[in-house]
Image (tube, rainbow, N blue to C red):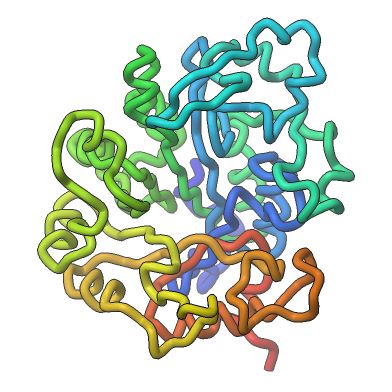
Length: 349
């Protein structure tokens, strides 16, 4: 099982805990996201955890995609046999037109191949289009087991449940299938190297009642969709107050905000530690870990004062951005290029 050390596991090679480096959708800065190749590369580059986002198939299987709409990350549009599956749907209040995971069986989805989601930014990744399948959660766990043995260290999984209320409404609730797979793989305890995160609240509370797995409350803008759809007034802003953090701490061990909630950019789009908010301090006061998202190396994703040159796709001063956020007291971070975080955390002597 993933949570157990292999027979040749050496003392002193336990899972790194501070600051935690999480391979965002794998090493998605180098390889198309949510593929076994992206996850394997993230681990090879030193990531402590890899992050699979989970959606459901028509036949109730858990697969890794950032969203249930498949057009941006697979070659489904090139499959004439699925042309009639294209449709419009409202997902968490947003109207989308495309192909959706819940309209396909796992066997059908296995005929698709992954493509780069942002090819204009990452043309090198796009060269790998068509070379990798959509992985299931079990395949990711199996990969993690193999990599754990070859790397001689624990490899953590940082799972996000995507659109849980929507899938519940489709009769495809993911909580029970997820916990079943985790239990079968020995990952259903607080000591297992696993986190489950969600932008919604009720599914995390449901998971906290059913399992001891560590949970992370993600923060976005406005209201969590489950709260909006059920008519409550709870907002992310309320959840980021000292009292709000205390309530979150009753079911979660940490929080995952957008990095701008920790340090707001100034009017010119520049990053300065002097503009840090109380988010980290107040979360820590409630004994919650803080793992912000997302750190990306390209100029187009960086604050204006950390960009290098005029090419929006060129690498900027991502190292300085990470250093500033580490100074703000975060406990971990999601990175598309996890090797950069590892290098900063473990500098060569």
